[in-house]
Image 1 (cartoon, one colour):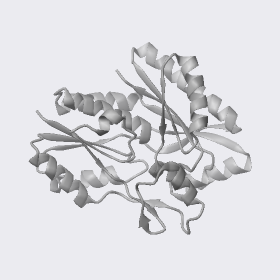
Image 2 (image 1 turned 90 degrees about the vertical axis):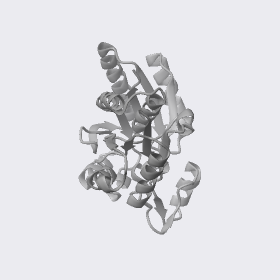
Image 3 (image 1 turned 135 degrees about the vertical axis):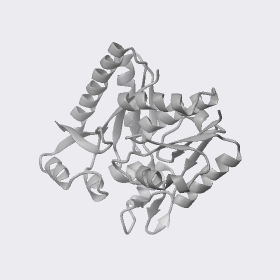
Image 4 (image 1 turned 30 degrees about the horizontal axis):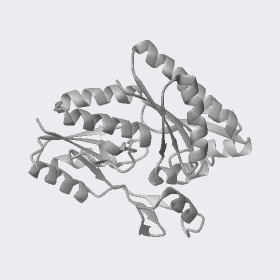
Length: 283
């Protein structure tokens, strides 16, 4: 059984995954002043944000593009596809695919809602690709992805909540309260894959410390259940700060901490100077 993995560009992937023959990545369009700009380096992107006439927006990949990907995989001899995508709680893409999948592919396609994005979603794709390479069947891979999805957690400390409000990913009331009280909220993905307020903390420094403590609590649960963790920090254009907190996490956990860029698409919603503290199941 030959299995292909498809994902979208919001997933943060390891280099060895990116070069895999069985993987296809569809671009989530990023539109700045009416022009699609998907290849900007993070520093260039956030500098451009300061001078744009209109706030950037994102769009769903086209159904036609997905049909072409699935068709080409069928022609290459793949038997089934597992398509892992950005949370249905912050994008309609998964639901669009599910509604149209019968007309898109000549081979079976399993649409898997990551209920997350960026670092946790990338970990799922990394693992799915690795398993597909070793010849595991679709049912086995999907079963493992379910286990990863249940275990995943990422805590987001956002510098300016108005970005999430502007793009419809968070209620205006939460941002207003945060602004008035000078609170740095900690956000997370809930069980439906929506970004929600998890905890209110005074000052960014305290919020970062609290996020680390939350990861440590999750790590204890992992140990109790015999799970092997992967820990990471995702950031939007504040790599030095991410490195500082990664070092603290490494000292406290004894595990290596991967540092990644959150990505321009997700950064459009969270804004610059966001840190995400994530823990994912590795085994």
